[in-house]
Length: 306
Image (spheres, helix red, strand yellow):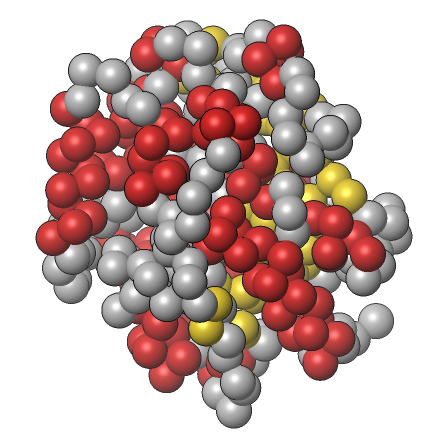
């Protein structure tokens, strides 16, 4: 597997994101290794909150949430998916698969970090990967926060706007990452923040990850990930793990998943689930501190067994 690594100077002077990065190697599932990156905030002995980003963003997306979580005594951990942020970037679209992304993240958070008692926060692909981990390793998770995400099996059609997004990012001669993120926000984005989203990708050769991910979402019942995702639903639908469904009011891509999660997951029953207003698909960018405050309240209301 051939990979690229974004030069460090691309990440200099990021607005409100001065965290020192951490790195570790994980098996690349192809006989070699990949370097994955993450940032942290908060006490090392705080309850871990795993902040998983999606497509085509990176851990920078969580920069306004991490101080709120850390201030509440939680250990906020934001990894970069393989192909994104400071993590290594396989150069071929075919190097990416749903199963590989689940295993890469599993290797990092369990084998390397040894996390336990985890509160998952998953948005976009962060939910698709994180919910699989929660179903396949339920003993590791104390709580689940699903924010503008879901766990598609291909048994139900995706919205037309998602198909338009997939076609655009797969066929565009140049993938304008910052523009794609901005188009998924309800509030204006500064030039400095836009540059932060572009930082991991010096040129098109670094963008196999962003180009690959839309094609990995299951869209039919014979998709390679369908069986595993159906099995994950079976586990989650019987799990008592507390769940917070924290969606925005302006996401046409995942909005239809919210009532399903609230109805099907036992851990979501009898709970008041917040709606983050004036926010789009990337609600962390639009309203990060507000979302983080909801997470803190949720953690405090669901003390984990020690």
